[in-house]
Length: 222
Image (cartoon, rainbow, N blue to C red; front, side):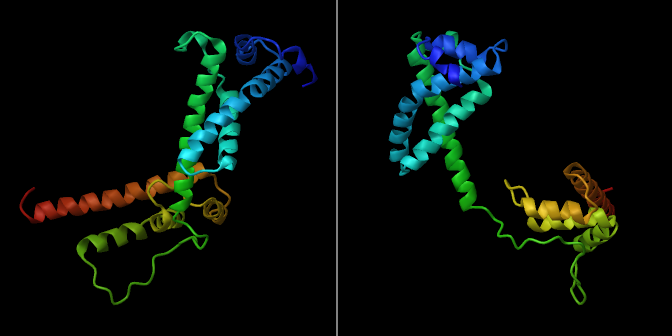
């Protein structure tokens, strides 16, 4: 980082090219990125503060958005002056960063909404068997599904019942529960968990398809 002073007066376009070039050394990229951050951070923060204030967020959020903006640029480094709507490199790069900041603010909002609506509270547990259903009257479909579940291997049944109980649209199962599930089944991978889940769903689907066919035949449709 000690060499960044050698780049501090370089034009913005030269800095972006140096940072984004595959031929640059890690040291050159690091120094170019540092100068870009130093040169444009204030502008991105000022714009972020204005937008954040509009949505009721304080300067802390604006600072988070600013950091996330430069982090996002560091990951993809996709600035191309020839695609900019203005040919002034400083203005074009600033506008490019503002677009990233807008996306990061959207991501921040979605993450906050996700946390607000998060359906898990840490009480989730692995389910290995169905509860006792003695004395309950079941219709044909319920009976068939129970038989289908009973036909599963212990591992498939555990995965199926646990997911059936806790999986919510738009949310993955809690990390702690998944870790416990993998350990419970012998330290298997998440890929194997997905395989068990698919196999279980396929078996249950085949049972219900046979049931539907039986219904059609009994109704004289077959």
